Image (cartoon, rainbow, N blue to C red; front, side, top):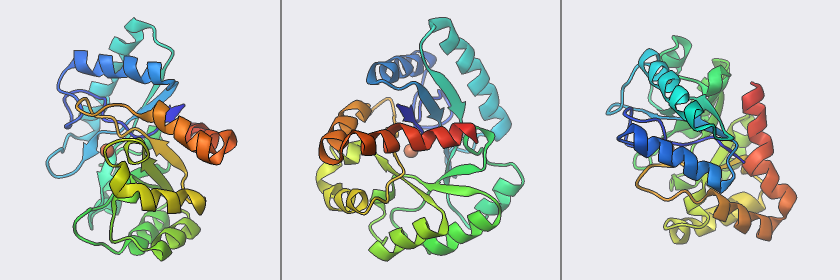
Length: 229
Ligand SMILES: [Fe+2]
């Protein structure tokens, strides 16, 4: 499996406080069956590590992971909190794209409704492909919003813990809708040290409900495109 949304990189956000904690998280991901993992630290006002600093932490972390000789590849990105200046920041390389590609992992406010179609339009016009993080969480999104942003060219990611974890009950209806309408591009863990990694369990649920082929698409195949760039 390919996990495109994690907070495993130490020191840079609320994901992990220490190197040892992060190394444990990588081991757990391997046990879940993850072969490729994107480290996507938050980029929002309270977590403002620069791309250069983040790349340095990433390179050091990668060396530590290599010492463990685990069957996993690591890639860097950011989970970018969308604001009015996000496109400018992307164009000026002040935000990290996914493995240096045109793909960008974007989160929106879950509290204050934003014009998601306008945001997607601006990102696409600037030459980037938005992946909307945990798309099931934005309660102000309408069914039309989902269809429209997909049609425009955005990609949609849902969290494993909305399929099987503590979020399940609250998100069930939206998750069912998204899968039945075939709107989901990726399932990812959004792994933080203080939350369990539920990727494998989520895979089993999706496989059982929608078949192996559908599960392979959202847990593996579509993410390969990001790695390829
Ligand atoms: Fe996240």
